[in-house]
Length: 320
Image 1: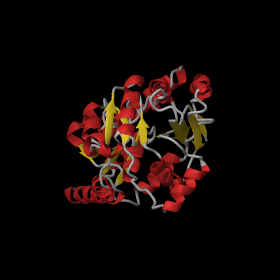
Image 2 (image 1 turned 45 degrees about the horizontal axis):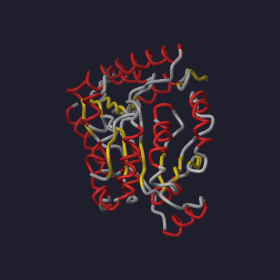
Image 3 (image 1 turned 90 degrees about the horizontal axis):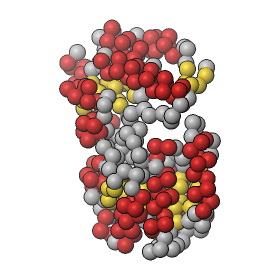
Image 4 (image 1 turned 30 degrees about the horizontal axis):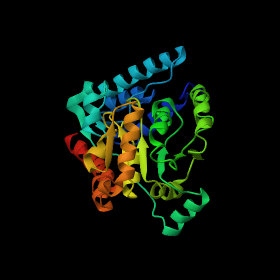
């Protein structure tokens, strides 16, 4: 019916959820979500297994309405956690450091997120290269233009990097215009984008096949996120499946793809000089950071995620 900051108001959601709850044997809820508390209570009253998947913490931009929204959602999340059977986290690392997940340690299960990347031909990869006139070292970033993504950290890293790699160029894949709630952030960064316009290209939102062609055209992918609204950085795994190493912030969860695979480097949060140095190391010796695709796929895949969820629900069914 309406929006409050980045959230939505859905007056008929509860009645629909009640009807569906009566027709099913379990619930799979995803946080953060304002409506999750009511759903979890329904599942508890119906004696159904309630599995919460906690994707990330919620930290909205500054402002009175956002502070209120943050608080309301935090309370709803806590209620949902109280009435849940199991809480799923992407990594134990994130679970150990999340203020929310640490409240429910005894109920946390770790299941990695699903990764699905369509196969693309060499011709599609080359076509993407021609379309964007790709030359010189390419630094990729795949995200929304949002405060928590740390875009300015990469922008401030460029002066440290360009003397050694004067032809380096950032390709930014993702929404960069009219991002809900991020207008002031985009306006603040606009002068930097103008300053580095020869070294920064916005690709816009790409579809799945275009993303699969984007990653192989990057020498390195960066995830310079700044806070716990980023819990994993799925694009890292997608890049790794395409043979592209990554440089990630030293955030709980976000650092795990690199640490688990060895396919890249971890840098201090918000440190542009360290980010530039890490990017330079990967560009200088990229082969050192590349691992076989099969090794990455064995750790992260949609099939593995589905199997582990299926096993969890089967276990809860038997326990019930």
